[in-house]
Length: 152
Image (cartoon, rainbow, N blue to C red; front, side, top):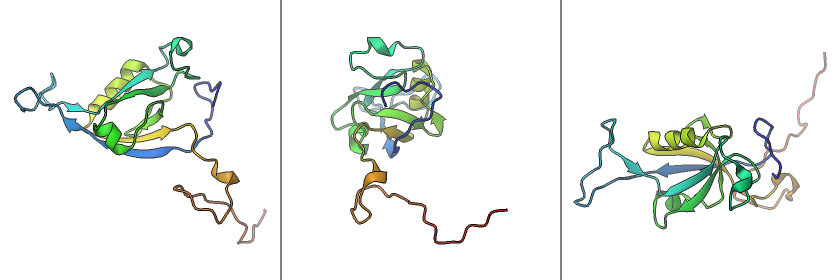
């Protein structure tokens, strides 16, 4: 993944995660209401990156200007859904996160109480090189020529 540039295809397996946020409560246990009049929620993670950030100055050494998870609150919604530090967020609720500013990424994450995310995680096995009878937590679909192919 090193050297990936925005807009170039990224060969990886995306991991789908669903994060159900916790309501943001004040000291007395009452829901906190945002400026828009809607209840606020906590997602339990912090991000870094964006196309407006200089990834060469990042202390984690991320290879591109993507949106990366930099912190997970222990026991929070992000931890419960399986999100991990250094995951690269590819998509949130249908929004492409590979070419967004940091501010826009925060807006997409804060917008809804449920986040349907696709993330890239370094170290996910390359399924194309797995043995056919070996089981993994992911499914691989190989194109087979069981049907005749007609050319015109």
